[in-house]
Length: 106
Image (tube, rainbow, N blue to C red; front, side, top):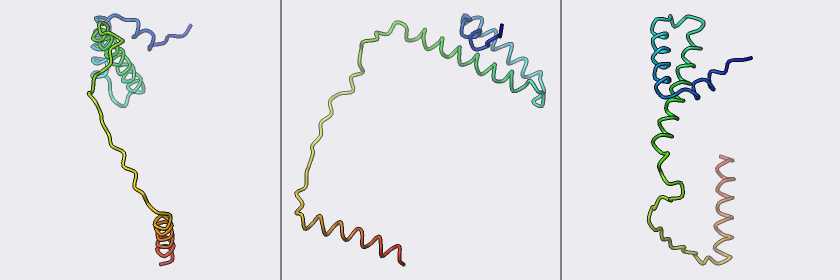
Protein backbone atom coordinates (compact mmCIF):
# COMPACT_ATOMS: atom_id res chain seq x y z
CA UNK A 1 0.00 0.00 0.00
CA UNK A 2 1.39 3.41 -0.96
CA UNK A 3 1.16 6.54 1.12
CA UNK A 4 -0.30 9.49 -0.76
CA UNK A 5 0.54 12.69 1.09
CA UNK A 6 -1.91 14.70 -1.04
CA UNK A 7 -4.83 12.60 0.18
CA UNK A 8 -3.53 12.70 3.73
CA UNK A 9 -3.39 16.50 3.96
CA UNK A 10 -6.72 16.94 2.17
CA UNK A 11 -8.42 14.66 4.69
CA UNK A 12 -7.01 16.58 7.69
CA UNK A 13 -9.01 19.13 9.66
CA UNK A 14 -7.88 22.75 9.57
CA UNK A 15 -6.37 22.43 13.06
CA UNK A 16 -4.38 19.35 12.09
CA UNK A 17 -3.28 21.05 8.87
CA UNK A 18 -2.04 24.02 10.87
CA UNK A 19 -0.04 21.67 13.11
CA UNK A 20 1.34 19.84 10.08
CA UNK A 21 2.41 23.12 8.47
CA UNK A 22 4.16 24.14 11.69
CA UNK A 23 5.90 20.75 11.89
CA UNK A 24 7.12 20.94 8.29
CA UNK A 25 8.25 24.55 8.68
CA UNK A 26 10.29 23.66 11.77
CA UNK A 27 11.78 20.70 9.92
CA UNK A 28 12.82 22.96 7.03
CA UNK A 29 14.48 25.46 9.37
CA UNK A 30 16.54 22.73 11.05
CA UNK A 31 17.45 21.09 7.72
CA UNK A 32 20.29 22.08 5.45
CA UNK A 33 19.16 23.29 2.00
CA UNK A 34 21.72 20.90 0.50
CA UNK A 35 20.03 17.94 2.19
CA UNK A 36 18.56 15.41 -0.25
CA UNK A 37 15.15 15.55 1.44
CA UNK A 38 14.94 19.36 1.68
CA UNK A 39 13.07 19.69 -1.63
CA UNK A 40 10.72 16.87 -0.70
CA UNK A 41 9.83 18.47 2.64
CA UNK A 42 9.43 21.83 0.91
CA UNK A 43 6.97 20.26 -1.58
CA UNK A 44 5.09 18.63 1.31
CA UNK A 45 4.82 22.04 2.99
CA UNK A 46 3.52 23.58 -0.22
CA UNK A 47 0.94 20.80 -0.59
CA UNK A 48 -0.21 21.27 3.01
CA UNK A 49 -0.53 25.03 2.51
CA UNK A 50 -2.55 24.48 -0.67
CA UNK A 51 -4.88 22.11 1.19
CA UNK A 52 -5.29 24.69 3.97
CA UNK A 53 -6.10 27.41 1.41
CA UNK A 54 -8.67 25.13 -0.23
CA UNK A 55 -10.35 24.43 3.11
CA UNK A 56 -10.41 28.13 4.01
CA UNK A 57 -11.93 28.96 0.62
CA UNK A 58 -14.59 26.29 0.98
CA UNK A 59 -15.44 27.43 4.50
CA UNK A 60 -15.67 31.05 3.34
CA UNK A 61 -17.93 30.35 0.39
CA UNK A 62 -19.99 27.37 1.57
CA UNK A 63 -22.90 29.61 2.61
CA UNK A 64 -22.93 31.59 -0.63
CA UNK A 65 -25.84 30.94 -2.94
CA UNK A 66 -24.71 29.05 -6.02
CA UNK A 67 -27.41 30.40 -8.32
CA UNK A 68 -26.63 34.08 -8.08
CA UNK A 69 -24.94 35.91 -10.89
CA UNK A 70 -22.73 38.90 -10.48
CA UNK A 71 -24.51 42.00 -11.75
CA UNK A 72 -21.97 44.01 -13.72
CA UNK A 73 -24.49 46.46 -15.15
CA UNK A 74 -25.56 47.00 -18.71
CA UNK A 75 -23.34 47.20 -21.74
CA UNK A 76 -24.37 49.05 -24.84
CA UNK A 77 -22.56 49.16 -28.11
CA UNK A 78 -22.90 50.75 -31.50
CA UNK A 79 -21.75 48.96 -34.62
CA UNK A 80 -20.67 51.22 -37.44
CA UNK A 81 -20.26 49.59 -40.83
CA UNK A 82 -18.32 51.78 -43.26
CA UNK A 83 -19.57 51.71 -46.84
CA UNK A 84 -16.48 51.28 -48.99
CA UNK A 85 -16.74 50.97 -52.73
CA UNK A 86 -15.17 48.01 -54.51
CA UNK A 87 -12.57 50.32 -56.01
CA UNK A 88 -11.52 51.67 -52.58
CA UNK A 89 -11.16 48.12 -51.20
CA UNK A 90 -9.14 46.99 -54.22
CA UNK A 91 -6.83 50.02 -53.97
CA UNK A 92 -6.26 49.47 -50.25
CA UNK A 93 -5.49 45.78 -50.80
CA UNK A 94 -3.11 46.41 -53.70
CA UNK A 95 -1.32 49.20 -51.82
CA UNK A 96 -0.88 46.95 -48.80
CA UNK A 97 0.62 44.08 -50.82
CA UNK A 98 2.85 46.25 -52.96
CA UNK A 99 4.24 48.14 -49.96
CA UNK A 100 5.02 44.81 -48.26
CA UNK A 101 6.84 43.57 -51.37
CA UNK A 102 8.71 46.86 -51.66
CA UNK A 103 9.80 46.62 -48.01
CA UNK A 104 11.05 43.05 -48.46
CA UNK A 105 13.11 43.96 -51.53
CA UNK A 106 14.86 46.87 -49.83
